[in-house]
Image 1: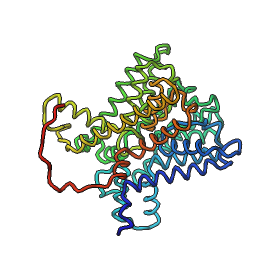
Image 2: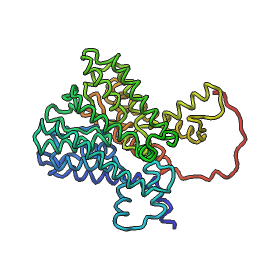
Image 3: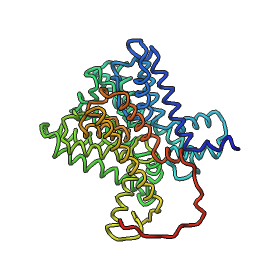
Image 4: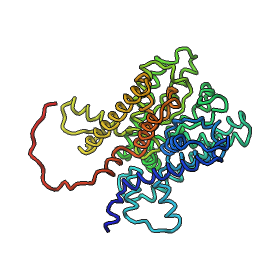
Length: 440
């Protein structure tokens, strides 16, 4: 049994993502992966593979103009596997081949998708895979008319599938560099239909598989939803509407009413880990950029394709603050009491994200001699696995890119997963120490 002792679910998740990134790096280094049919540097391939696997969207080479069809397929595959989860794909293949899954494998799956319990894991895995394929196929069908009209049938179908996968997985990779390098979806800023389809794909992917399973199971019977689903849906709605209102009144003042509304809604949706943009982000005010950073740090929901601290974490922190303000003992929501461990975990996650986000931003700012807010935007985008940038990613040194790669990996795998993998668990049944108060 000793040789299996170190193979905890957390370490398996980490090494699975690391193995996928390394495989993607080696494939992208092949001459066939670039349009120039030349070997791409290891650092550029590693950065691209990390960004794709961690569904971030930060790039050092324009996806459309630099990578060949093979390279684009590699990137899309990394996005797909990274979005659904390496463990999800692996265990689904094992199940399909008739192999019996052990309890440790099911436990790993539970941690990978943030499921509340081991029971029903395989049913949930099937739901994740089927749901992902159905939504992405539907998204590709809806996007196809737009891209076929602009790029022809074959290329249009390929573009529709790529952007559907990228949007649902909240990756932010795009192929619009054929019009202008690193332009994202700015050429479609006024296209109502495309904007709505992309936003819907981002929202569906960012809500989380656990919540959608709850919605489909209980439909309009809201009282039967789990507390997490209620928190996720309510928080997600508020995090879309409130920032959209701010952007409408404080940004994009030079646009007409229609374009202003569309751009405000799109940036509010995409900021929480999607990575697309329809307006030049470098033209935003400092207050607008700061709001974008906050949204990027919060991210999507537990068990989703999105990264960030997660909406449930943000909700628990907010509820904890309200509990203190109201001088209550228990954190309550929807007539339920939250366990103390939820608030402790949420506080730990907030500390880790803020520490890494700020420290990394300061280091990059000092090393690259760039404005601090610009660097904080970059590190917030990386740790939140968003992919939005103010246009400095390609100009950064290897040190700064390495920092961003670590942040992307941290943001996708999860802070607590990394900590639990590095620190062995300790038994807590040894008795409790005496209590002594500390003023705060």
